[in-house]
Image (cartoon, rainbow, N blue to C red; front, side):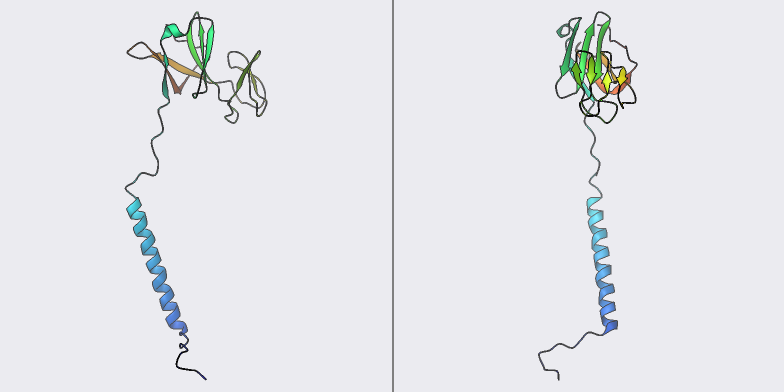
Amino acid sequence: MSGRLESEPIARRDFLGLAGLWTTAIAIGGALLGMVRLPKPSVLPEASRRFRLGRPDEFPPGTSKVIAGQNVLVVSKPQGIAALSLVCTHLGCIVSKNEAGFSCPCHGSAFDGDGRIVAGPAPRGLRWLQVSAAVDGRLIVNAGNEVDPGTYYRV
């Protein structure tokens, strides 16, 4: 016995029609949201891999200096100035300097003082980075350009 307050059950055909309409509305809404978001780039340009070191006279021959925040070691020798990346070539850990050269604290790779691989899972030695001079005479390291090991910038 049905009362006046009870709703009539919806027919199967009506339910499927309503479900189709709602699915279409959701698909159109999602497409519109995508179109609104389209003009905004989803990939932002990455930061420059070039950074300034300073004046050449700040690096007298026979010294080395770690550039904080850049994971680079600047080595100054009589033949010039070079920059070595302190990022391990195995999995990207930051190597630490020790008396024999460099060692990876995570996976045990070992490198000599010139960054050549001595032991461990690293497939190759540390990267040597390009050093050049700016117009004002200050040294610049381009961490995006790798040079051959043993390449020094003559000051």
